[in-house]
Image (cartoon, rainbow, N blue to C red):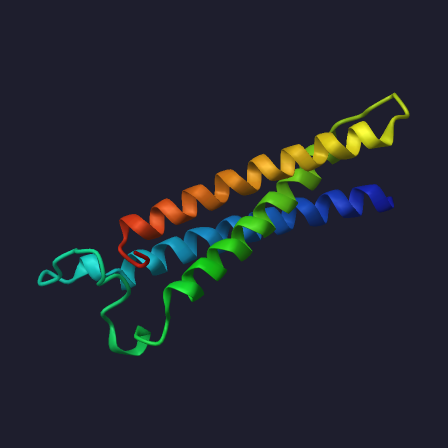
Length: 125
């Protein structure tokens, strides 16, 4: 197996792992959401989990986790997308800037989606 094939296999394996991690994190956020409590009344300052052992987890922790997962997913997808492409011109700056734009769009999309999900679950205000 060549070096390129090893990198490609690792990228695909790590993408599958990250997708499972994202699904598990989403299910965990759903389970600890205050919306699971029937007495919870949403208003502007009571976001966060109502479970006693989750009281120490602040909004900053949820946002940090969302940033880490979005960064890892966007980086992994960018690597997979740009490994599959073959460019026959020699301008590396254009290729690098295209890759950077792809990463930025993916990162922004994942961040917006994760923030929206955390807002819907009332884990952040």
